[in-house]
Length: 231
Image 1 (cartoon, rainbow, N blue to C red):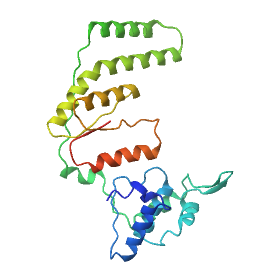
Image 2: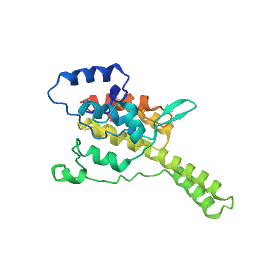
Image 3: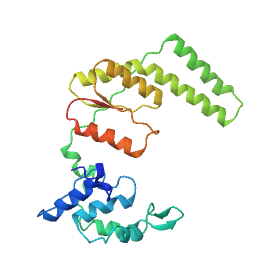
């Protein structure tokens, strides 16, 4: 299960070598994943080779055929995509794909709610001042973007306390929670405040992290069956 995580996609890792060895003595190999194509098409090869050994050739056979593999000044790179129609047809030979529309009748209904947050007078004044600048400024698009960024931060500040209360309450009720936050420092403050309340928090994940760091945090959160928050 979750065959796209950990060392599975790294064909040189000990994890993959161990799983590959188990595959040689298994009667059946079935790999499960909600997102088998994680970043690049080349990442599919290890899973395909485990499910159907030799059917797609070795890695570089696969890379040259489907990943636009080419030599560069840093060695061979396989970061692209080629013969996509052929690959799609080949995948249909061994992949059972279930889309949301195929299983939606078995899923609980989606409940959407909008939380209203009251603004302090100071916050209202700051927002009105920025809105007036947007209406009458003549500094061009760059200035407009800067004002919008300041508005987003003001709204984030205004929502932080309510967000902490709502998320903590959700966890106390026995539910996990996924929180999306626009600003990195707001996400950090959210995590610190929740931890101070005794809430188990994973993250925050941010664009400043590399893919391996993000994957490790997500994997730990998925493995934790208790109630927690992922930011």
